[in-house]
Amino acid sequence: MYRRLGNIHWGPLLAALALCAIGLATVSSASAVGGTDYLPRQALWIGIGLIAMLIVFQVDYHTWIELAPVFYAASIAMLIAVLMVGRQVGGARSWLGIGSLGGQPSEFAKLATALMLVRYLNQVRRPALDLRHLLGASVIAAVPVVLVMLENDLGSAAMFGPMVLAMLAVGGLRLRHIACGMMILALLGAGYWAVGARGHQVQRIASFLQPDKDPLGAGYQVRQSKIAVGSGQWMGRGYGQGTQSQLRFLPERHTDFVAAVLAEEWGFLGVLTMLGLYAVFVASTARVAARSRDRAGILLLAGLLGLFAFHVLYNTGMVVGLVPITGIPLPFLSYGGSFMLVNFLITGLVLNVDDRRYVNR
Image 1 (tube, rainbow, N blue to C red):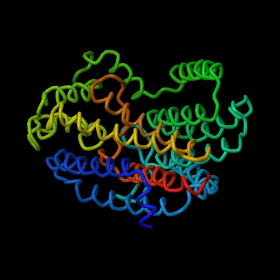
Image 2: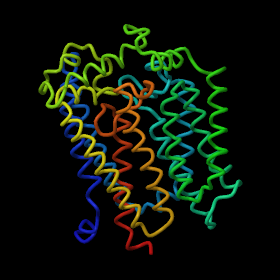
Image 3: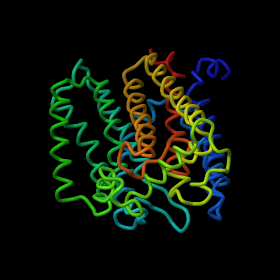
Image 4: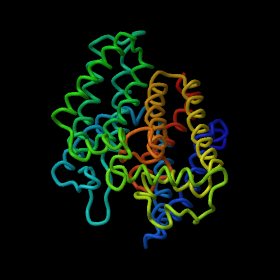
């Protein structure tokens, strides 16, 4: 046991724990003024996530890949259940639960889809993927994506893209396939915008293109977020001293806009620390992938890395108005049970691949 622990690259776990500590403090500061301190709940989910991470770590990741059809089918069933009996939050019917207990099946669907794609692509023994393999992978990814889009959760559906692209790139994607794929996605996106986009989605895009057109309506969130980020300056206003969060001007301050609260309270140095920890997690995971001894491990980590990194990029871009606002949380910082659990499952799989690099030669 001690030998195994000594061989593991601890970068991802240490970065995750540090981010969780920052997240606990920031969530507590952001939510305390609302009458409900989410610190105990967030701490509970972190504890559950650590237990789940240890379970995932103990079982060889090849076993999890072999069980991928079971996880994939279960995630599809949950997404269908959401369409039938799910709860609507923020314009999207994406929550499944009973009473105050619930979660977003789309978060688990991302991980299940990654495992299913690894199982499928690992069987390809060619240097480059052909059209048949691309179609097969596309179908695997398209089923949960379409279901998530039917929930009106376009942001979560978009998060599948970087994950799938990273795995296909590692699996042997050709440049002409990338060009064709981009054209197809552009056409599908235009078609969805023309006939399928919901009112709140159109409103968010419009507020992104013209943020000052409706500053008290659709553009309110990003406007208040920019004020919070800018007012932090270099050193911040101090813990619990941010006007945007403490006076409740900033919506969704303990979830999607937790980075804005951090920026207001700790300034540029606080944001730099946060981004540095994310860089450690990403770089450490990339190093684990580079020294993995089999194709399955590399494919798995490539997909998980694409998923994790894009969440960070999109959320941080969202709080400063560089991308449209969607319900994309920040890994390990934003309040949320299912998302926190999935992030720790990802960490467990990263450590799992690294631990078994000497076994799978």
